[in-house]
Image 1 (tube, rainbow, N blue to C red):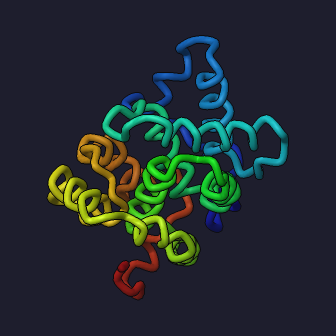
Image 2 (cartoon, rainbow, N blue to C red):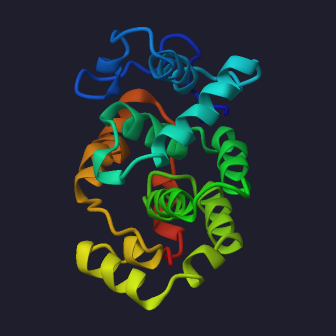
Amino acid sequence: MKRESGASNTSEAMTVPSNTAHGARHCGNSPLDHSLEKLWALVSSDMPPSDQHARQALDYLVVQATKTSLDKLDKAVAETFALLFWYRNEDMREALENRLSMPRLAPVRKRRLMYLVDRLRRFPCMKPEQAEQMKKLVTRWKDLAQDLNGKQVEKAQAVNRYDKVAATWGVAEPVSSLMSLVLDLQTRHFVDAHHLPNGYSQLATRPPHH
């Protein structure tokens, strides 16, 4: 993804603040550690994920984001997912589509992923054209929500009373703590400090999200 005009490839490269997921980068030698290391390099650069390792890391991130209950999602995974979704969205799309298209993947995992997509696309830090692409993805996979039975919907509504998107996708796992992990990464201050491409400049003319 190209940065907005005036951004330098060197002096303005993103430096991740100490309270975000870079703290997990020194952890160890697990596949997740290696994937997050590769993805942080991708977030911080202007280069596309052209090498096989970066693409594998994107796929691995999407798997990690949905394999367990969202209230137990690793902080580093949540932050890396949100950063790439908001600021390198075109790099994420193939990994998202690939995961959703897996016929044997449990519906609950697909619904977790669709919750993340549907929830994160609504934040104003996203460029509107990218948010629109994610809205189209939500529309393409709406059957995942429509196939829910009444008990699944009621349980999701009871668990996530204040998050209608979670209820829509039948996510019966508390999601408030997950959202609190990533909110600091979508502020004007954050995108300005790290010179990230964003949608704030177009906010005044953007129609509301639905």
